[in-house]
Length: 89
Image (cartoon, rainbow, N blue to C red; front, top):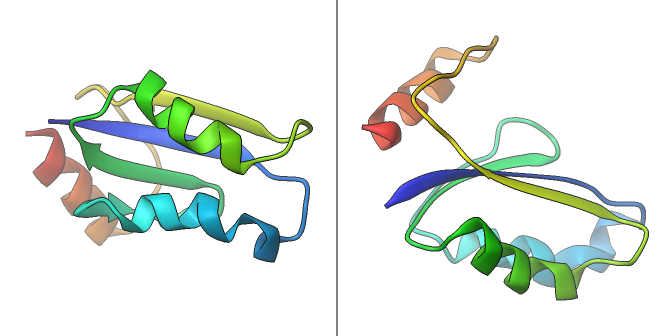
């Protein structure tokens, strides 16, 4: 299992992306504190996630999926850091 960072820039109104957002809810563990960023605990690769999500967005939207490593830093609430530490091992 690994943690992937999935971030996006969606140009259409949010209600047009119901199928896109539903994919995140299918995972057993996820984190979503930042508006256009999700962390998902998954067995799937970034490419597999991309193959699932790209058909659910529009040509002018953007999507980036990166595997998270134990090297990270930022300014987040304590429960966000707890989730990251717990799921990165």
